[in-house]
Length: 418
Image (cartoon, rainbow, N blue to C red):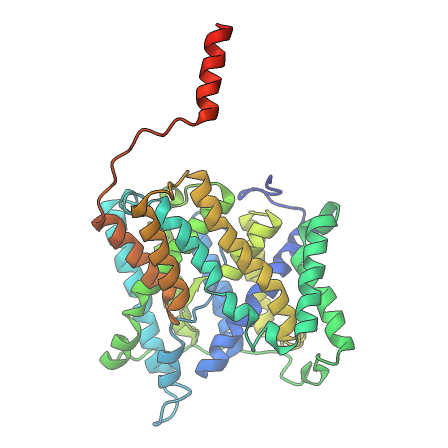
């Protein structure tokens, strides 16, 4: 399928805004869920996600159409310091640890810059990349179908999913480019008739929110709790960049380089810590939007970041988006996460990965089982397992391909004709 807008192309303003809103709707639920679970301010998380995304695009020269939202990897650690802290919430301590997470990213950036991005492509071939990309989507299947999303109301989730699919397949013109936005709108109307939309919370809060700077406090125990997780989320980011590269048909590991991705994510996380926001990470939901719509324009993602910053200050608009039932978003992300998994299959097909090879089958099977079966950070651990297996298992000798009867007949026919 051909792209509709390439990375450096800029859609007309009205179209760009609607396309940006798709990304805002896609990331909104997860981005505000993290602060709710950890005890941080959801408005600040929106603000820092927007700022972090703009920083990321600046560092990657606008060549990676990714949105940065709140990372789920650090929920337990931050919650233990804020929401579940027996001594009372200690946001500065949590933000000090989050700031160090950003520094870990920057240290790894310096290492990759010193040794070159080629070291990644050398040790992470398609037999590792393909299944890792698959599990990024498949490992999220439980979230999409779980009791907190689609499972909250299956009729609404199924209606939203079907509406989104029908729009994607049968819509014409610009409507075909915004199937996620239209699908969410259709699901929202359906949810209203089912009595799932709570209008009482719209406008109940302050009209304007004013974020406050947080001066991080550095305590060794808190740092040791969060900082090591950065190595896992870095591996997950690597998988996301492979997905985006696959979708946009670009080698983003080489250009702009994975080192720039690390720098952008690290700076975004460090800056977020000064506002009281959680660490940032590239979002699979938004990658799914890019895959479905085939709109790769970085400008659209950047505009989505600006909208997120605007929403962090304006309460009523944010309240309307917050009123979208979880079942509606569940129906949409079933499609988005599935598209990510499909991109992994495409990676192996296009690279002509030989799955008749015992070695390759072992690598793929271990990655899939670890990535899907491990409850937390499965993608990161599966990627590490795949890289190690690729290094340890010996390459099999290339055998001459067997000649089929059909091929032999073809050769004999050619001789007769000749």
